[in-house]
Image (cartoon, rainbow, N blue to C red; front, side):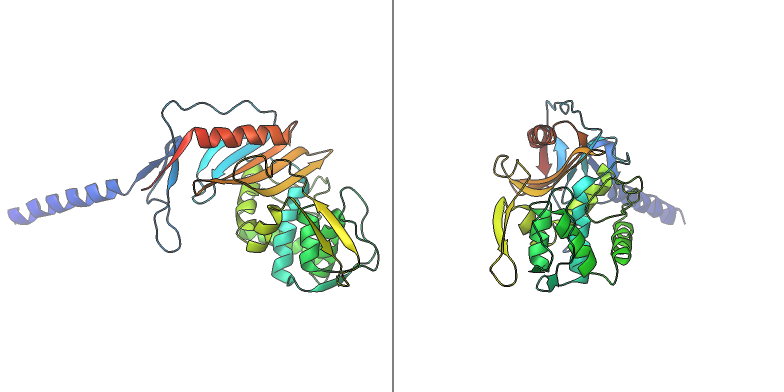
Length: 300
């Protein structure tokens, strides 16, 4: 019996050591029971602060967050759960919802397009594909394209908006609610930096959306090939910041300046969300440079 108890003590100690070694320390004193794992069970590199770490630059943005795109680990946050008008970043959800309901090759007849704010340039009677509408919405931030998609990819406009909100719930965007597909200001149309980081991560997982949001400029045509739409990306950081791959700009009277970006360097990717800024491009650029200079990615 004595030998049994001694063996039990040694076994418990061994289990404790193994259990303790399965914990990995991450930035901001967060503990995870296991290192981040991909679907194929490969352990993912994760970001840690380097020696001589410098605090993030002061920014005017009301809310901001920086996450590692692969693991979801937070590198920086400022009021990440503050409800704020998302402006045209809303169109990322419009794009996701549209692709769940419509195929890119589907042709759409335009009836009475909206003419408020930034536009793709649609006219009544135009016949365009869903894919062309996605380009017009995500590159030129066309409000006309956003509404055209909402009419085409659901039995009704209200049903499309309901699908957007249902998708937000599925993505655990707990502080988000949409009332329109373009991002117009509305007291019931809101999101947070934390939620929009989740949205961006899912959006760029779509090869088509990822390709579109990283396009600086392009020309698309209607189905006949006669009418052309010249599209110029509003995101000034494309081609200026090393490794930047999109994602979406936004600006309304209520939201001030908004920008969500994805940047990859040395196979490491971060997503930066800036809400309510006076200088979205300058502040995003500063934070991107800060993130890569002050963190290194460690393999478990």
